[in-house]
Image (cartoon, rainbow, N blue to C red; front, side, top):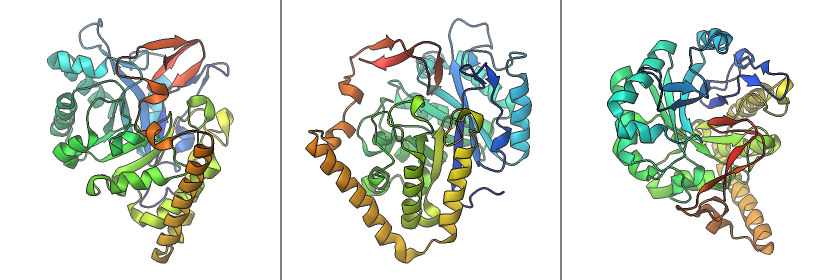
Length: 361
C-alpha cells in the first residue's frame, strides 16, 4: 500500500490515550503506508516551569515516563517508514506565542531543544490567539536558520484568514506570505468551526485565486474534522471525497492535499479503526490522480460552483448570509468578547479539556 503520489495526506495526532474508552493507548503505527505527514500535537510553551522545562506536549513534559514512552517508540517506527513527523505548536491553549514574544531568550531554546531531542522534522504554527506578525516571522526565520532548508515550517490558519476574512491569529497571512513565504512550506487551512466549509468547496478555489494567487493550490492543504464530536462544522467523509475528486480535477498534481483533525476518533472507522479515514483519503486521491484529464477541469470547476450556489440559495431562504459569516468572527464574537467555559467534554484543537472547553460567548 503506497501513499498518494504528489498529494499530502496528513493527520493530527493529539490524543495518545482515549479516555472515553478505558484510557486505551492510541498507536500511530496503523498510519504507516496511509499518510505522508503526521502532526504530533500539541506542544505548548508554559510559564512557571523549571529552567529548560517550559515546553509540554499537551499537559505533560514530553519526556514523561511511562506516559509517552510507547508513543515515542512508535513515532520512531513511523519516521523510519518514511512518514514525516512534525510538531504542532500552539492551538487553543493560550500563551505560547505571547511568551515567545516577551522572553525569546528564555523560551525559544527550550523549543529548539525539544525539536532536536525528538527528531521532529518540522513545526506547524497554529496561532489561535492575537499574535504579533513580527514574532511569527522571527520564529519561522530562526527555525530555518537552526534546522536547515529541509526543515518544514507550516501554518494552520482558519480557512477564511487566507482570503482576509475571519481570522484568529491577529496578523495578515497575505503579508506574512509576502515577507517570508519562501520559508513556509504550506498552509493547513482549517475548514471548520465557522471559518468555511470544505463542501461545497468554492472557498478553496477562492483562496487560490485571492490576491493574484498569492496562495497557490500546492501551498494550501485542506484541514477538516474527522468526526463530528471533534468540533463544529464537520464535513461528512463522502463529501470530502467528492470535494477531493473535483479539486484534483481542477488542479491536478498542484492540489495541496488533505489533513484531518484528529486521528483517534476518525470516521468511518471511529475509535476502533481510526486509520480508515486516512485510507479513504488515500484511495480517493490515488483513484482521481490516475484518471486525471485536463479536459475535465472546467466540468469539475462548474460542479464546485454549482454546489456553492445551491448552498447560498438554501442559506438565503433560511435568512443566513454566508458571505458575512465568513468575514466575521465566529458566533458574533468581537475582539473584546471574552471566553467562557462550557461544561462539555471534547478534545479541542491544540488542548484537551477534561469536562470543559473554552467557548466563544
